[in-house]
Length: 466
Image (cartoon, rainbow, N blue to C red):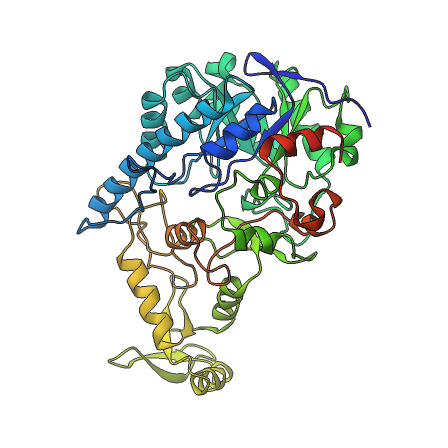
């Protein structure tokens, strides 16, 4: 195994080991500071981060505003307070070791306001801002204004080129690194483009090599690329280390820090990670962001899979094969189905899926009355946690604060489920993000006999190559 030597990132030398940020109260100041004590780059998430009462009790994010706009303002205030709290804890725990980064999602509600609010309230405590989930053109301006480095998350050379040509070339000196997040292997939201097949993974090496070639064309040959997604043992990536074709490379670990003593997830969640099997993590299209995302295939995801299968197209008038009348809603407004689909609907209704819910794509999905009430309540309770949400049709942009489309019952309230699972909610009933290598917890001897390391011990273990 080659030696893992420090590289220059963000103006200083650090170990090329980066903690991946996991939103909504999972990557917090404790995990971030613990990772940094090992000499790497710790990352806390500023996506709906927890804040605390004076006695250390977590302040649960409840919303009292009567309108979505009012609740959205509450969400932004929670986000800023929580981000500042996590930055302070990370700084204290790190004790001057390593680096402290903050992760935000560009498509989260109020992203720029939250980022600026946290950096203002935690001046001098944060060294870098990592940002993905969308095209964060204004990330560089935010970083420059606060004197920190920025680390865009992209999944292709083409995406970085677009960011560079439109915005980043103006703030070259503050670019600390570029995170290549593999869209088939990473946990959480993934940057698959319309030209890429979610069922046909591509080898990351040629994609990262193309990114490096693109960066060299821009004069960025010495700016580190951070490989994210699918990294477990570094000995499996020896060909990447000190490779002159790739230039300086660091490695990001998002899933492994979940199973550390500092990690705030529940003990039940940690034990579940130790029992995952290959194939238990699903790349799925149900997120209200519109992105694909990777999560453990549990009852929550199975219900979404089944819900989307119970779907038929309809027309408002009889057209072609759509001649079978069907009444929708309490008033039984007539739409037209094919004869084949009407037979399917009759079967679903016999199984208890009696509520037909319209989608933006002129289809009906069939759910139980209980699930219909839950979906409608979640849509009404929306607090604008995304810049645009297909589940609730919220948009943070004036004047309508709407995407202009119907709310989509084929998705779910992501804020609700991620807050619940992060605060000891039932694992089978919530979205459980994970990378596709999470099944390796069960076979990695490091975790034998149920051993759970500290974040610093994990960094030390990774440095051995295993």
